Length: 133
Image 1 (tube, one colour):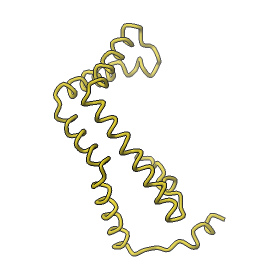
Image 2 (cartoon, one colour):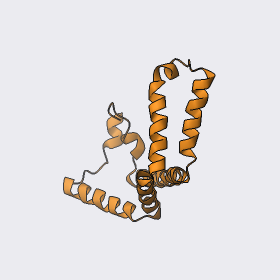
Image 3 (cartoon, helix red, strand yellow):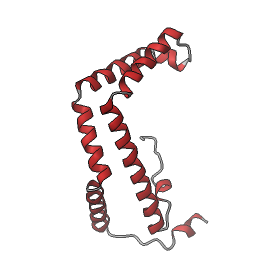
Image 4 (spheres, one colour):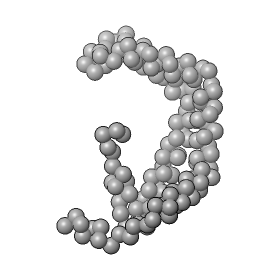
C-alpha cells in the first residue's frame, strides 16, 4: 500500500537536486526575515551583558539539573532560577533575537507547506526527527 504513494514520484539527478537546494537557500537568505535574524543573532552574540546573563542562567540551571528533573527545587532555588531567566530573556537584544527567530521559523514553516503542496508529499513528515535530532 505504501509503495503506491511513491509510484508517480519522479527522481531528479543529484546535481539538479543540489542546484535546487542551493537556489532555495540563496532565495531564503535574501528574505527580510532571514536578514533580520542574521542581524539580531550577530547583535546577540556580540552583546556582553546578554552573554553573561545567558551564562549565569545556564550555570545555575546546570547546577540544579538533578533537582529540576525530580521537581524538588525549594522556593529560593526556583525564584533564583526564574529571576536569572527573566534577567536574560527580558534584555532587549535577546527579545529582538527571539522575535526574529520566531519570524524566520514562521516563514520556513510556510515554505515547507508550499514545498509539500508543490511536490505532493508532506515535506515535514518526510524529514521527520531521527535519533540524532
